[in-house]
Image (cartoon, rainbow, N blue to C red):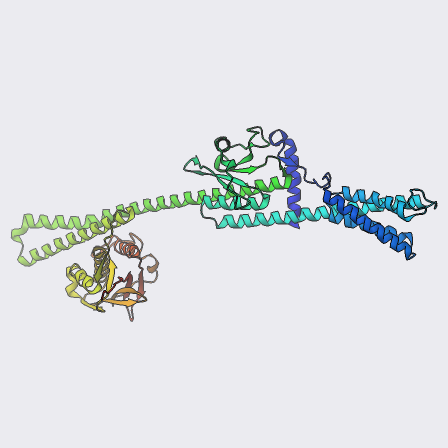
Length: 542
Protein backbone atom coordinates (compact mmCIF):
# COMPACT_ATOMS: atom_id res chain seq x y z
CA UNK A 1 0.00 0.00 0.00
CA UNK A 2 2.87 2.34 0.84
CA UNK A 3 4.54 1.73 -2.53
CA UNK A 4 1.20 2.25 -4.29
CA UNK A 5 0.78 5.64 -2.63
CA UNK A 6 4.33 6.56 -3.54
CA UNK A 7 3.66 5.65 -7.17
CA UNK A 8 0.40 7.63 -7.16
CA UNK A 9 2.14 10.70 -5.75
CA UNK A 10 4.94 10.22 -8.22
CA UNK A 11 2.43 10.01 -11.07
CA UNK A 12 0.79 13.27 -9.97
CA UNK A 13 4.13 15.07 -9.88
CA UNK A 14 4.96 13.55 -13.25
CA UNK A 15 1.67 14.85 -14.70
CA UNK A 16 2.54 18.38 -13.54
CA UNK A 17 5.99 18.11 -15.08
CA UNK A 18 4.49 16.77 -18.29
CA UNK A 19 2.15 19.75 -18.52
CA UNK A 20 5.14 22.08 -18.12
CA UNK A 21 7.06 20.26 -20.87
CA UNK A 22 4.11 19.73 -23.20
CA UNK A 23 5.94 21.04 -26.20
CA UNK A 24 8.41 18.17 -25.93
CA UNK A 25 6.03 15.33 -25.07
CA UNK A 26 2.78 16.29 -26.77
CA UNK A 27 0.76 13.26 -27.77
CA UNK A 28 2.75 10.66 -25.81
CA UNK A 29 0.66 10.62 -22.64
CA UNK A 30 -3.02 9.96 -22.08
CA UNK A 31 -5.20 10.79 -19.08
CA UNK A 32 -4.63 8.53 -16.12
CA UNK A 33 -8.37 8.24 -15.34
CA UNK A 34 -9.45 7.24 -18.81
CA UNK A 35 -12.34 5.34 -17.27
CA UNK A 36 -14.48 8.49 -17.00
CA UNK A 37 -14.90 9.05 -20.73
CA UNK A 38 -14.61 5.50 -21.98
CA UNK A 39 -17.22 4.72 -24.62
CA UNK A 40 -19.27 1.61 -23.73
CA UNK A 41 -18.91 -1.38 -26.00
CA UNK A 42 -21.78 -3.34 -27.58
CA UNK A 43 -21.18 -6.05 -25.01
CA UNK A 44 -21.61 -3.56 -22.14
CA UNK A 45 -24.84 -2.24 -23.67
CA UNK A 46 -26.22 -5.77 -24.09
CA UNK A 47 -25.29 -6.67 -20.49
CA UNK A 48 -27.00 -3.51 -19.20
CA UNK A 49 -30.23 -4.17 -21.08
CA UNK A 50 -30.25 -7.83 -20.06
CA UNK A 51 -29.74 -7.02 -16.37
CA UNK A 52 -32.66 -4.59 -16.25
CA UNK A 53 -34.89 -6.98 -18.17
CA UNK A 54 -34.22 -9.52 -15.41
CA UNK A 55 -34.88 -6.83 -12.76
CA UNK A 56 -38.23 -6.00 -14.41
CA UNK A 57 -39.24 -9.67 -14.53
CA UNK A 58 -38.35 -10.02 -10.84
CA UNK A 59 -40.35 -6.85 -10.11
CA UNK A 60 -43.45 -8.28 -11.84
CA UNK A 61 -43.00 -11.47 -9.81
CA UNK A 62 -42.79 -9.44 -6.58
CA UNK A 63 -46.04 -7.63 -7.47
CA UNK A 64 -47.84 -10.95 -7.94
CA UNK A 65 -46.54 -12.00 -4.54
CA UNK A 66 -47.89 -8.69 -3.14
CA UNK A 67 -44.45 -7.32 -2.17
CA UNK A 68 -44.24 -3.56 -1.63
CA UNK A 69 -42.77 -1.07 -4.11
CA UNK A 70 -39.79 -0.64 -1.76
CA UNK A 71 -38.70 -4.21 -2.45
CA UNK A 72 -38.97 -3.63 -6.19
CA UNK A 73 -36.94 -0.39 -6.00
CA UNK A 74 -34.11 -2.20 -4.18
CA UNK A 75 -34.04 -4.80 -6.97
CA UNK A 76 -33.44 -2.04 -9.53
CA UNK A 77 -30.71 -0.46 -7.34
CA UNK A 78 -29.11 -3.89 -7.09
CA UNK A 79 -29.26 -4.10 -10.88
CA UNK A 80 -27.41 -0.77 -11.11
CA UNK A 81 -24.67 -2.09 -8.80
CA UNK A 82 -24.33 -5.30 -10.82
CA UNK A 83 -24.16 -3.25 -14.04
CA UNK A 84 -21.34 -1.09 -12.67
CA UNK A 85 -19.41 -4.24 -11.73
CA UNK A 86 -19.85 -6.07 -15.04
CA UNK A 87 -19.27 -3.10 -17.36
CA UNK A 88 -16.47 -0.59 -17.89
CA UNK A 89 -16.87 3.07 -17.04
CA UNK A 90 -19.71 5.11 -15.59
CA UNK A 91 -21.91 5.51 -18.63
CA UNK A 92 -23.63 2.12 -18.44
CA UNK A 93 -24.38 2.45 -14.71
CA UNK A 94 -25.77 5.98 -15.17
CA UNK A 95 -27.81 4.86 -18.19
CA UNK A 96 -29.00 1.92 -16.12
CA UNK A 97 -30.15 4.31 -13.38
CA UNK A 98 -32.39 6.18 -15.82
CA UNK A 99 -33.51 2.93 -17.43
CA UNK A 100 -34.54 1.52 -14.05
CA UNK A 101 -36.80 4.53 -13.39
CA UNK A 102 -38.35 4.27 -16.86
CA UNK A 103 -38.99 0.53 -16.56
CA UNK A 104 -40.41 0.84 -13.05
CA UNK A 105 -42.75 3.64 -14.15
CA UNK A 106 -43.83 1.94 -17.38
CA UNK A 107 -44.31 -1.67 -16.24
CA UNK A 108 -44.81 -1.62 -12.49
CA UNK A 109 -47.01 1.40 -11.65
CA UNK A 110 -50.68 1.99 -12.35
CA UNK A 111 -51.75 2.54 -15.07
CA UNK A 112 -49.52 -0.10 -16.74
CA UNK A 113 -47.82 0.51 -20.10
CA UNK A 114 -47.94 4.25 -19.48
CA UNK A 115 -45.71 6.92 -18.00
CA UNK A 116 -48.65 8.41 -16.08
CA UNK A 117 -49.17 7.53 -12.41
CA UNK A 118 -52.27 7.69 -10.22
CA UNK A 119 -50.42 8.00 -6.94
CA UNK A 120 -49.33 11.51 -5.96
CA UNK A 121 -46.03 10.38 -4.33
CA UNK A 122 -44.60 8.43 -7.25
CA UNK A 123 -42.69 11.37 -8.82
CA UNK A 124 -40.82 11.80 -5.53
CA UNK A 125 -40.16 8.05 -5.44
CA UNK A 126 -38.84 8.18 -9.00
CA UNK A 127 -36.53 11.10 -8.16
CA UNK A 128 -35.14 9.44 -5.02
CA UNK A 129 -34.79 6.14 -6.91
CA UNK A 130 -32.84 7.90 -9.67
CA UNK A 131 -30.53 9.71 -7.25
CA UNK A 132 -29.85 6.53 -5.25
CA UNK A 133 -29.21 4.53 -8.40
CA UNK A 134 -26.82 7.12 -9.83
CA UNK A 135 -24.90 7.42 -6.55
CA UNK A 136 -24.73 3.66 -6.05
CA UNK A 137 -23.61 3.02 -9.64
CA UNK A 138 -21.07 5.85 -9.59
CA UNK A 139 -19.52 4.78 -6.30
CA UNK A 140 -19.40 1.15 -7.40
CA UNK A 141 -17.73 2.04 -10.70
CA UNK A 142 -15.26 4.28 -8.89
CA UNK A 143 -14.36 1.54 -6.42
CA UNK A 144 -13.89 -0.86 -9.30
CA UNK A 145 -11.69 1.65 -11.10
CA UNK A 146 -9.52 2.22 -8.02
CA UNK A 147 -9.23 -1.53 -7.43
CA UNK A 148 -7.99 -1.89 -11.01
CA UNK A 149 -5.54 0.99 -10.57
CA UNK A 150 -4.12 -0.43 -7.34
CA UNK A 151 -3.84 -3.84 -8.96
CA UNK A 152 -1.87 -2.31 -11.81
CA UNK A 153 0.29 -0.38 -9.35
CA UNK A 154 0.99 -3.55 -7.38
CA UNK A 155 2.00 -5.33 -10.58
CA UNK A 156 4.22 -2.45 -11.69
CA UNK A 157 5.80 -2.20 -8.25
CA UNK A 158 6.61 -5.90 -8.39
CA UNK A 159 8.13 -5.41 -11.84
CA UNK A 160 10.31 -2.62 -10.45
CA UNK A 161 11.49 -4.80 -7.58
CA UNK A 162 12.19 -7.69 -9.96
CA UNK A 163 14.09 -5.36 -12.28
CA UNK A 164 16.28 -4.06 -9.47
CA UNK A 165 17.00 -7.61 -8.24
CA UNK A 166 17.81 -8.95 -11.72
CA UNK A 167 20.01 -5.96 -12.55
CA UNK A 168 22.04 -6.60 -9.41
CA UNK A 169 22.65 -10.18 -10.57
CA UNK A 170 23.63 -9.17 -14.12
CA UNK A 171 27.36 -9.23 -14.85
CA UNK A 172 27.56 -7.45 -18.20
CA UNK A 173 25.98 -4.50 -19.99
CA UNK A 174 24.31 -6.81 -22.52
CA UNK A 175 22.72 -8.85 -19.76
CA UNK A 176 21.52 -5.67 -18.04
CA UNK A 177 19.95 -4.42 -21.27
CA UNK A 178 18.25 -7.79 -21.82
CA UNK A 179 16.81 -7.70 -18.27
CA UNK A 180 15.57 -4.14 -18.74
CA UNK A 181 13.88 -4.85 -22.06
CA UNK A 182 12.30 -8.08 -20.81
CA UNK A 183 10.84 -6.23 -17.82
CA UNK A 184 9.56 -3.39 -20.02
CA UNK A 185 7.81 -5.92 -22.26
CA UNK A 186 6.06 -7.29 -19.13
CA UNK A 187 5.26 -3.82 -17.87
CA UNK A 188 4.03 -2.15 -21.05
CA UNK A 189 2.88 -5.20 -23.05
CA UNK A 190 4.68 -3.78 -26.09
CA UNK A 191 7.59 -4.73 -28.28
CA UNK A 192 10.83 -3.07 -27.17
CA UNK A 193 13.76 -2.06 -29.38
CA UNK A 194 17.21 -1.92 -27.77
CA UNK A 195 20.58 -0.60 -28.90
CA UNK A 196 23.72 -0.96 -26.79
CA UNK A 197 26.95 1.02 -27.09
CA UNK A 198 29.95 -1.19 -27.84
CA UNK A 199 33.46 0.23 -28.21
CA UNK A 200 32.08 3.73 -28.68
CA UNK A 201 29.57 2.74 -31.39
CA UNK A 202 25.86 1.99 -31.34
CA UNK A 203 24.98 -1.62 -32.15
CA UNK A 204 22.59 -2.67 -34.93
CA UNK A 205 19.73 -3.12 -32.47
CA UNK A 206 17.56 -5.97 -31.22
CA UNK A 207 13.79 -6.30 -30.85
CA UNK A 208 12.27 -7.93 -27.77
CA UNK A 209 8.81 -9.11 -28.82
CA UNK A 210 5.80 -9.40 -26.53
CA UNK A 211 4.83 -12.46 -28.60
CA UNK A 212 7.84 -14.73 -29.02
CA UNK A 213 6.71 -16.05 -32.39
CA UNK A 214 6.88 -12.57 -33.95
CA UNK A 215 9.75 -11.79 -36.32
CA UNK A 216 8.68 -8.41 -37.71
CA UNK A 217 11.70 -6.16 -38.33
CA UNK A 218 9.79 -2.93 -38.99
CA UNK A 219 11.44 -1.25 -36.00
CA UNK A 220 14.96 -1.95 -37.31
CA UNK A 221 14.62 -0.32 -40.72
CA UNK A 222 17.39 2.19 -41.62
CA UNK A 223 15.15 5.20 -40.87
CA UNK A 224 14.51 4.01 -37.30
CA UNK A 225 18.17 3.13 -36.75
CA UNK A 226 19.12 6.62 -37.90
CA UNK A 227 16.88 8.11 -35.20
CA UNK A 228 18.43 5.84 -32.56
CA UNK A 229 21.92 6.99 -33.61
CA UNK A 230 20.76 10.61 -33.39
CA UNK A 231 19.56 10.00 -29.82
CA UNK A 232 22.92 8.44 -28.94
CA UNK A 233 24.94 11.24 -30.49
CA UNK A 234 22.83 14.12 -29.11
CA UNK A 235 21.82 12.59 -25.76
CA UNK A 236 18.16 13.62 -26.27
CA UNK A 237 14.87 11.80 -26.59
CA UNK A 238 13.30 11.65 -30.03
CA UNK A 239 10.46 10.07 -31.96
CA UNK A 240 6.74 9.93 -31.19
CA UNK A 241 5.53 12.83 -29.04
CA UNK A 242 8.77 14.85 -29.18
CA UNK A 243 9.97 17.76 -31.30
CA UNK A 244 12.43 15.52 -33.15
CA UNK A 245 11.45 12.91 -35.77
CA UNK A 246 7.73 13.07 -34.91
CA UNK A 247 6.88 10.60 -37.68
CA UNK A 248 8.97 7.82 -36.14
CA UNK A 249 7.36 4.55 -35.12
CA UNK A 250 8.84 4.61 -31.62
CA UNK A 251 9.66 6.89 -28.74
CA UNK A 252 13.45 6.69 -28.28
CA UNK A 253 15.06 7.26 -24.87
CA UNK A 254 18.77 7.34 -24.05
CA UNK A 255 20.08 5.08 -21.29
CA UNK A 256 22.36 7.64 -19.73
CA UNK A 257 24.00 8.99 -16.61
CA UNK A 258 24.90 12.62 -17.13
CA UNK A 259 26.59 12.97 -20.50
CA UNK A 260 27.54 9.31 -20.81
CA UNK A 261 25.13 7.25 -22.95
CA UNK A 262 25.16 3.47 -22.51
CA UNK A 263 22.44 2.62 -25.01
CA UNK A 264 19.09 3.57 -26.55
CA UNK A 265 15.65 2.05 -25.96
CA UNK A 266 12.76 2.42 -28.40
CA UNK A 267 9.12 1.95 -27.37
CA UNK A 268 6.51 1.66 -30.17
CA UNK A 269 3.84 4.34 -29.60
CA UNK A 270 2.04 5.07 -32.87
CA UNK A 271 -1.52 5.34 -31.53
CA UNK A 272 -1.54 3.61 -28.16
CA UNK A 273 -0.09 6.37 -25.98
CA UNK A 274 1.25 6.02 -22.43
CA UNK A 275 -0.59 6.96 -19.26
CA UNK A 276 1.31 9.04 -16.73
CA UNK A 277 2.08 6.13 -14.38
CA UNK A 278 3.39 4.00 -17.26
CA UNK A 279 5.62 6.84 -18.38
CA UNK A 280 6.89 7.44 -14.86
CA UNK A 281 7.75 3.77 -14.32
CA UNK A 282 9.26 3.56 -17.82
CA UNK A 283 11.68 6.33 -16.89
CA UNK A 284 12.38 4.64 -13.54
CA UNK A 285 13.27 1.33 -15.21
CA UNK A 286 15.50 3.05 -17.79
CA UNK A 287 17.23 5.02 -15.02
CA UNK A 288 17.74 1.83 -13.00
CA UNK A 289 19.39 0.25 -16.04
CA UNK A 290 21.61 3.30 -16.57
CA UNK A 291 22.63 3.29 -12.90
CA UNK A 292 23.46 -0.43 -13.01
CA UNK A 293 25.58 0.07 -16.14
CA UNK A 294 27.32 3.03 -14.48
CA UNK A 295 28.11 0.90 -11.41
CA UNK A 296 29.46 -1.86 -13.65
CA UNK A 297 31.61 0.65 -15.51
CA UNK A 298 32.95 2.05 -12.22
CA UNK A 299 33.67 -1.47 -10.96
CA UNK A 300 35.61 -2.29 -14.15
CA UNK A 301 37.55 0.96 -13.89
CA UNK A 302 38.27 0.26 -10.23
CA UNK A 303 39.49 -3.22 -11.10
CA UNK A 304 41.73 -1.83 -13.85
CA UNK A 305 43.16 0.74 -11.46
CA UNK A 306 43.75 -1.99 -8.87
CA UNK A 307 45.60 -4.08 -11.48
CA UNK A 308 47.69 -1.06 -12.49
CA UNK A 309 48.47 -0.33 -8.85
CA UNK A 310 49.43 -3.97 -8.29
CA UNK A 311 51.66 -3.92 -11.36
CA UNK A 312 53.32 -0.75 -10.13
CA UNK A 313 53.86 -2.36 -6.74
CA UNK A 314 55.31 -5.45 -8.43
CA UNK A 315 57.70 -3.26 -10.42
CA UNK A 316 58.74 -1.45 -7.26
CA UNK A 317 59.26 -4.74 -5.41
CA UNK A 318 61.23 -6.14 -8.33
CA UNK A 319 63.50 -3.10 -8.49
CA UNK A 320 63.98 -3.20 -4.72
CA UNK A 321 64.76 -6.90 -4.75
CA UNK A 322 67.04 -6.71 -7.77
CA UNK A 323 68.91 -3.72 -6.37
CA UNK A 324 69.74 -5.76 -3.27
CA UNK A 325 69.71 -9.44 -4.17
CA UNK A 326 71.29 -9.27 -7.60
CA UNK A 327 73.90 -6.76 -6.52
CA UNK A 328 75.06 -8.93 -3.62
CA UNK A 329 76.06 -12.04 -5.64
CA UNK A 330 77.46 -9.90 -8.45
CA UNK A 331 79.65 -8.02 -5.98
CA UNK A 332 80.70 -11.33 -4.46
CA UNK A 333 81.61 -12.78 -7.86
CA UNK A 334 83.46 -9.61 -8.82
CA UNK A 335 85.35 -9.47 -5.50
CA UNK A 336 86.33 -13.12 -5.60
CA UNK A 337 87.44 -12.86 -9.22
CA UNK A 338 89.52 -9.77 -8.37
CA UNK A 339 91.15 -11.62 -5.49
CA UNK A 340 92.05 -14.56 -7.73
CA UNK A 341 93.33 -12.22 -10.42
CA UNK A 342 95.54 -10.06 -8.23
CA UNK A 343 96.44 -12.33 -5.32
CA UNK A 344 95.96 -15.83 -6.72
CA UNK A 345 99.64 -16.72 -6.36
CA UNK A 346 99.57 -15.92 -2.65
CA UNK A 347 96.52 -18.07 -1.84
CA UNK A 348 96.69 -21.68 -0.76
CA UNK A 349 94.71 -24.36 -2.60
CA UNK A 350 92.05 -24.65 0.12
CA UNK A 351 91.27 -20.92 0.00
CA UNK A 352 91.15 -20.99 -3.79
CA UNK A 353 88.77 -23.94 -3.72
CA UNK A 354 86.43 -22.05 -1.37
CA UNK A 355 86.50 -19.01 -3.66
CA UNK A 356 85.65 -21.22 -6.65
CA UNK A 357 82.73 -22.71 -4.71
CA UNK A 358 81.43 -19.24 -3.77
CA UNK A 359 81.63 -18.03 -7.37
CA UNK A 360 79.81 -21.15 -8.58
CA UNK A 361 77.07 -20.82 -5.94
CA UNK A 362 76.48 -17.17 -6.74
CA UNK A 363 76.33 -17.79 -10.48
CA UNK A 364 73.95 -20.74 -10.03
CA UNK A 365 71.69 -18.59 -7.87
CA UNK A 366 71.68 -15.84 -10.51
CA UNK A 367 70.82 -18.37 -13.23
CA UNK A 368 67.90 -19.65 -11.14
CA UNK A 369 66.61 -16.11 -10.56
CA UNK A 370 66.80 -15.28 -14.26
CA UNK A 371 64.99 -18.53 -15.19
CA UNK A 372 62.20 -17.77 -12.71
CA UNK A 373 61.88 -14.18 -13.93
CA UNK A 374 61.67 -15.29 -17.56
CA UNK A 375 59.05 -17.95 -16.75
CA UNK A 376 56.89 -15.55 -14.73
CA UNK A 377 57.11 -12.90 -17.45
CA UNK A 378 56.05 -15.39 -20.13
CA UNK A 379 53.19 -16.69 -17.98
CA UNK A 380 51.86 -13.19 -17.28
CA UNK A 381 52.18 -12.16 -20.93
CA UNK A 382 50.62 -15.38 -22.21
CA UNK A 383 53.73 -16.11 -24.28
CA UNK A 384 54.68 -19.31 -22.47
CA UNK A 385 53.79 -22.22 -24.75
CA UNK A 386 52.90 -25.41 -22.92
CA UNK A 387 54.02 -28.71 -24.42
CA UNK A 388 51.87 -31.35 -22.75
CA UNK A 389 53.07 -34.93 -23.00
CA UNK A 390 52.45 -38.16 -21.10
CA UNK A 391 55.28 -38.84 -18.63
CA UNK A 392 56.02 -41.37 -15.89
CA UNK A 393 56.03 -39.53 -12.59
CA UNK A 394 58.98 -41.42 -11.04
CA UNK A 395 61.16 -40.55 -14.05
CA UNK A 396 60.27 -36.85 -13.78
CA UNK A 397 61.14 -36.84 -10.06
CA UNK A 398 64.44 -38.59 -10.76
CA UNK A 399 65.29 -36.06 -13.48
CA UNK A 400 64.51 -33.11 -11.18
CA UNK A 401 66.94 -34.46 -8.55
CA UNK A 402 69.76 -34.06 -11.10
CA UNK A 403 69.16 -30.30 -11.22
CA UNK A 404 68.82 -29.41 -7.53
CA UNK A 405 71.36 -27.54 -5.42
CA UNK A 406 74.78 -29.15 -5.15
CA UNK A 407 74.37 -28.90 -1.37
CA UNK A 408 71.92 -31.79 -1.45
CA UNK A 409 74.70 -34.14 -0.34
CA UNK A 410 74.42 -32.58 3.11
CA UNK A 411 70.73 -33.68 3.33
CA UNK A 412 68.90 -36.99 3.34
CA UNK A 413 66.66 -36.99 0.26
CA UNK A 414 64.22 -39.88 -0.12
CA UNK A 415 61.78 -40.58 -2.96
CA UNK A 416 58.68 -42.74 -2.56
CA UNK A 417 56.64 -43.03 -5.72
CA UNK A 418 54.04 -45.55 -6.76
CA UNK A 419 54.97 -47.36 -9.94
CA UNK A 420 53.52 -46.57 -13.34
CA UNK A 421 51.81 -43.25 -12.62
CA UNK A 422 51.37 -41.72 -16.05
CA UNK A 423 50.80 -37.95 -15.86
CA UNK A 424 49.84 -35.36 -18.48
CA UNK A 425 52.29 -32.46 -18.07
CA UNK A 426 54.78 -30.02 -19.54
CA UNK A 427 57.79 -31.93 -18.29
CA UNK A 428 60.26 -29.00 -18.25
CA UNK A 429 57.95 -26.79 -16.22
CA UNK A 430 57.09 -29.54 -13.71
CA UNK A 431 60.82 -30.24 -13.27
CA UNK A 432 61.24 -26.52 -12.57
CA UNK A 433 58.47 -26.73 -9.93
CA UNK A 434 60.08 -29.74 -8.24
CA UNK A 435 63.54 -28.12 -8.30
CA UNK A 436 62.16 -24.94 -6.72
CA UNK A 437 60.35 -26.85 -3.97
CA UNK A 438 63.33 -29.11 -3.18
CA UNK A 439 65.80 -26.20 -3.25
CA UNK A 440 63.54 -24.30 -0.86
CA UNK A 441 63.59 -27.25 1.51
CA UNK A 442 67.40 -27.36 1.30
CA UNK A 443 67.70 -23.61 1.76
CA UNK A 444 65.43 -23.23 4.78
CA UNK A 445 66.19 -26.41 6.75
CA UNK A 446 69.34 -27.18 8.76
CA UNK A 447 72.00 -29.50 7.40
CA UNK A 448 71.24 -33.16 7.95
CA UNK A 449 67.46 -32.66 7.60
CA UNK A 450 65.37 -35.25 5.83
CA UNK A 451 63.53 -34.32 2.60
CA UNK A 452 60.99 -36.76 1.18
CA UNK A 453 59.36 -36.60 -2.27
CA UNK A 454 56.23 -38.74 -2.53
CA UNK A 455 54.14 -39.57 -5.60
CA UNK A 456 50.75 -41.30 -5.49
CA UNK A 457 47.27 -41.47 -6.98
CA UNK A 458 44.51 -39.69 -5.06
CA UNK A 459 40.91 -38.95 -6.13
CA UNK A 460 41.61 -39.58 -9.80
CA UNK A 461 44.69 -37.33 -9.91
CA UNK A 462 48.42 -37.63 -9.38
CA UNK A 463 49.49 -36.13 -6.05
CA UNK A 464 53.11 -35.09 -5.40
CA UNK A 465 54.35 -34.08 -1.93
CA UNK A 466 57.66 -32.46 -0.94
CA UNK A 467 58.11 -32.95 2.82
CA UNK A 468 60.80 -31.77 5.22
CA UNK A 469 61.39 -31.95 8.97
CA UNK A 470 62.82 -28.46 9.31
CA UNK A 471 61.54 -25.61 11.50
CA UNK A 472 58.41 -25.18 9.36
CA UNK A 473 56.64 -21.96 8.37
CA UNK A 474 54.99 -19.60 10.87
CA UNK A 475 51.19 -19.39 10.73
CA UNK A 476 51.25 -15.63 10.10
CA UNK A 477 53.33 -16.19 6.95
CA UNK A 478 51.17 -18.92 5.40
CA UNK A 479 48.48 -16.65 3.82
CA UNK A 480 51.21 -14.77 1.88
CA UNK A 481 53.64 -17.56 1.09
CA UNK A 482 52.54 -17.84 -2.58
CA UNK A 483 52.58 -14.08 -3.25
CA UNK A 484 55.18 -12.73 -5.62
CA UNK A 485 58.22 -11.09 -3.94
CA UNK A 486 57.16 -12.27 -0.49
CA UNK A 487 60.22 -13.43 1.44
CA UNK A 488 58.81 -13.67 4.96
CA UNK A 489 61.18 -11.12 6.44
CA UNK A 490 61.53 -7.36 6.39
CA UNK A 491 65.22 -7.51 5.57
CA UNK A 492 66.79 -10.03 3.27
CA UNK A 493 69.61 -12.08 4.72
CA UNK A 494 72.44 -12.83 2.36
CA UNK A 495 72.68 -16.35 3.68
CA UNK A 496 69.13 -17.06 2.53
CA UNK A 497 68.66 -14.47 -0.14
CA UNK A 498 65.50 -14.82 -2.22
CA UNK A 499 63.40 -12.70 -4.56
CA UNK A 500 60.26 -14.51 -3.46
CA UNK A 501 59.52 -15.69 -6.99
CA UNK A 502 59.84 -19.46 -6.70
CA UNK A 503 56.59 -20.38 -4.93
CA UNK A 504 54.56 -17.85 -6.92
CA UNK A 505 55.91 -19.35 -10.14
CA UNK A 506 55.20 -22.89 -8.91
CA UNK A 507 51.60 -22.01 -8.15
CA UNK A 508 51.09 -20.43 -11.59
CA UNK A 509 52.53 -23.47 -13.36
CA UNK A 510 50.44 -25.95 -11.36
CA UNK A 511 47.24 -23.93 -11.94
CA UNK A 512 48.01 -23.94 -15.67
CA UNK A 513 47.96 -27.75 -15.38
CA UNK A 514 44.48 -27.61 -13.75
CA UNK A 515 46.03 -28.54 -10.42
CA UNK A 516 46.42 -27.02 -6.96
CA UNK A 517 49.47 -26.23 -4.83
CA UNK A 518 48.89 -26.39 -1.05
CA UNK A 519 50.98 -25.86 2.07
CA UNK A 520 50.36 -27.96 5.20
CA UNK A 521 52.27 -28.68 8.41
CA UNK A 522 54.32 -31.86 8.76
CA UNK A 523 54.22 -34.00 11.90
CA UNK A 524 55.94 -33.50 14.30
CA UNK A 525 57.57 -30.52 12.59
CA UNK A 526 58.39 -29.15 9.19
CA UNK A 527 56.09 -28.46 6.26
CA UNK A 528 54.60 -30.25 3.25
CA UNK A 529 54.08 -28.73 -0.21
CA UNK A 530 51.50 -30.78 -2.11
CA UNK A 531 50.39 -30.31 -5.71
CA UNK A 532 48.14 -32.29 -8.04
CA UNK A 533 48.36 -33.06 -11.75
CA UNK A 534 45.90 -34.73 -14.14
CA UNK A 535 46.44 -38.39 -14.91
CA UNK A 536 46.86 -39.46 -18.53
CA UNK A 537 44.02 -41.29 -20.21
CA UNK A 538 45.51 -44.47 -21.62
CA UNK A 539 43.58 -46.63 -24.09
CA UNK A 540 44.77 -50.24 -24.37
CA UNK A 541 44.33 -51.83 -27.80
CA UNK A 542 44.08 -55.60 -27.60
